[in-house]
Length: 242
Image (cartoon, rainbow, N blue to C red):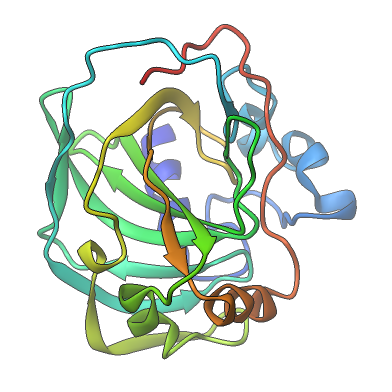
């Protein structure tokens, strides 16, 4: 059941959570402080292994390189009221821990949800993957203001302006064009950063920061009309590996 909630929520294309829970948001009575109380489906939001976190206090580890096998496949962009999301066609994946995780979609948060060594970034991308058993892995990428991101420009050219809007992309997006060439990463165990906040998610945060232009960052912010970053969560006893 939990795996079904995972994937349904991840692929939802409406402003209301598709997991069967209630409305949620980023402020007021529906804001992050109250997510766990909005629905029994969201009880994990009060858990001990939640995301995002401030990545610091690193533990040195022999992390195996992530094996990326990404093809051009971003074929649909939607605005679900909580983020702008690009859905990805089947056929792209990563390999972690000897498992294959298929890329489902990538979406954005502004400002960044995770912090690195106490630093917040103006934009963060989450590339969401699932293996055949529904286990999740998220590759996170931070953006700083700078040169235009050419890969991002393809998706942003058809930015849906209203919650519920969805467009087929006239030119498929290759997520490789968004990512940096150096893909060394930090790793920790966490959760989804939105309801149902399900835990057991492998978080793989790229060390190298990408650039996006000021206009690109502002275009996303103006589309959502509000910040969409969950506040930092307690690390508790979790190690953050590098």
